[in-house]
Length: 172
Image (cartoon, rainbow, N blue to C red):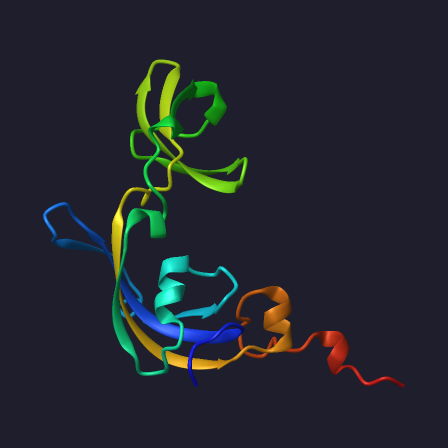
């Protein structure tokens, strides 16, 4: 079965950051964690560039996909670096490199503390991988039709949760 919209795809991947000299640095390895990724194809569950590369592939396929920043987490935007008051963080422990999830205009966003100068904190609201070229080494393990419940939820469901409790009850 080829990967198309509305199918659940299970895969292993190694995600690497491509450095300026062409070498790579591994950021994540699903096989090392023994946790394959399962996603619903065509429902914005993974990066669009990776999803396009997987379209039409079958179980057993192995591919290497390199995504430019614009296809991954976006181009770095220096306007997203700003100074905020230390009071904005309440009693949280702060140090350069600390990351917090906050609610932004477009939904949840990650904020990285760059520096602290007295009561002023310089933060970066770019995604931590914005501006990075990423490389995925992917092995497709399985492709299957999504259940109606998965399509309704927009993502794969754990085994045994395909039907709602109401559907399983007998009407007297």
